[in-house]
Image (tube, rainbow, N blue to C red; front, side, top):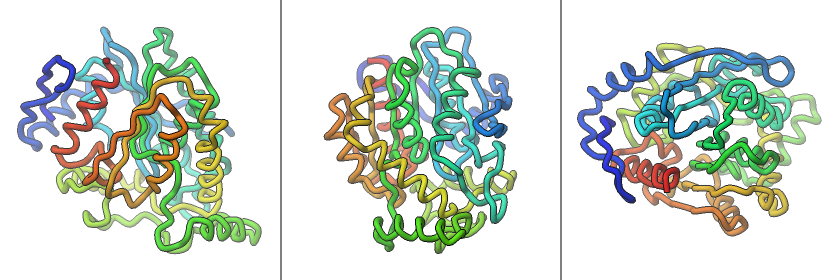
Length: 327
């Protein structure tokens, strides 16, 4: 953090300074710009958003967050976007953060009736809140937000100029349970009337500090995120329901279909993490093979949340993002 821009084709960041000092700097910079509000999504669900609007913006960046996430987790990235001259708009997807809760077992469970509702919520956010008329709008999406973003791009043209998909959820990593078996189990549980139960092995929100299994290698950034969860426990989310799993599997099959991918008409920068344990990166390779206007960048030593990774990864990651946006 602590940005000092060098305007050339390769480097946009140096002199990051001390992390502790810069976290205060981020807060001081964001707070005066932050505007908050709610809008009504599909099925009359209240959805929370924040926007950071610059007077002389280069363009607008819309952020689509990942599974169990909330806006505060992106404050460092929002800071970078703003410092580079881009206004930022971000909403919390249904069932997350301060948006309408959907968990049936408890308030920390992640569930959704239809994955399509995420896409339609995003469209409504763009139409009613962002309301871009300049043609200089860009999409940044992470993990589950990447699946939402990809389907949106396949269905709706003319909104975005370019898109950045960071470790997108094109296929869920089901761990020790084979992917096909996980799909079958989700269908069986729904037929048995147990679709709103937690996926086997998943539970409600746990506030344990666990860097080893975290999606980032950086202890400070992970601790900062964890502290925010402890400070506002309403933001915490646990595991997902079988309904969510089934909807997510159907959505990822849809988005990786060659016929649907061919509907996208803008350049895409796709980031892949070599140590990702949350999504199956083989689907990234398939997408990259299908879609010719895709630039796939792999960080071999990066974990799933590249935007919160160690500086040697994060700085390179940011350089590639801003070169992609401004070239």
